[in-house]
Amino acid sequence: MGTPQHRSVTLLLLRHGLTEVTGTVLAGRSPGLHLDGRGREQAERAAHRLAGLPVDAVVSSPLERCAETAEPVARALGLPVHTDDRFAECDYGEWTGRTLEELAEEPLWPVVQAHPSAARFPGGESLAGMSARAVEAVRDWSGRLLTAGRAGRDPVLLVCTHGDVIKALAADALGLHLDLFQRVQADPCSVTAIRYTAMRPFLLRLNDVGETAEGLAPPEEAATDAVVGGGAGQARDRTRG
Image (cartoon, rainbow, N blue to C red; front, top):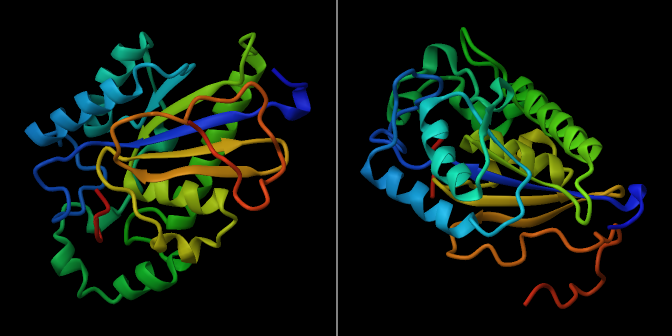
C-alpha cells in the first residue's frame, strides 16, 4: 500500500433490485415496499458477482428494498449490513406514492428535470439536501475505513442505496453541478464504482449491469494522476425508485 497521501477508497454503489412499482410509481420512503421476484433474483446475481471482492464494509439505506438487496451480497462477502439513514431515498413528501405519469403534469416537474438544485418536494426534502447528506456519509465512512487501516491494501466500501442518491454521488465525483445529475442513469441492481484518491475521484463504472466485478478491486497503489490517452486499463428511463 502507498503512503497515506496516496491511499484511496473504492466506493461501490449498488442500486436496489426491482419492486412491483419500480418505474411507474415514485416509491420514495414508502414503508413495506419489498423486492419482487425479479428483484430478489437480481440481488442474488449481484451477490454472486461481487462475492470475490475485498469489501471492508456493507452499508444500506434503511428502506426494505435496499436491505433485501444488501443482505445476500453481505452474506456472500461474510460481512454484516450496517444501516445509515443518510443513504435513504430522497424524501419526496407529498409526491411519495404517486405515479410518474401524474407527477409529470405537476408545475414542479420541469424544475426537477432541468433545475434540480432548486427543487424542494412539497412536505419533503430538497434534492440539494439529499445530495449533501449522501456526500457527507461517503466521506464519513471513507474516513472510518482509512482510520481502521487494514494492512496490505486500500479499503472498499459497498453501499446499497437508491437511484437519485447514486446519480447525485456520481455527479459529485465528476465535478458536475447538481443541475446536470439527471444526465446520469442508475438502473435496478446496477453497480456504479468511484475510486477516491488524494487528488481526485475516478469514475470506474457507471450503471454497470454486467456479470463480473473485474477491475473493481483496489490496485496495490492508486495513482492520483489521470492517465493521458486512457491507458491500458484492467485484464433505463425516468425511474426514481
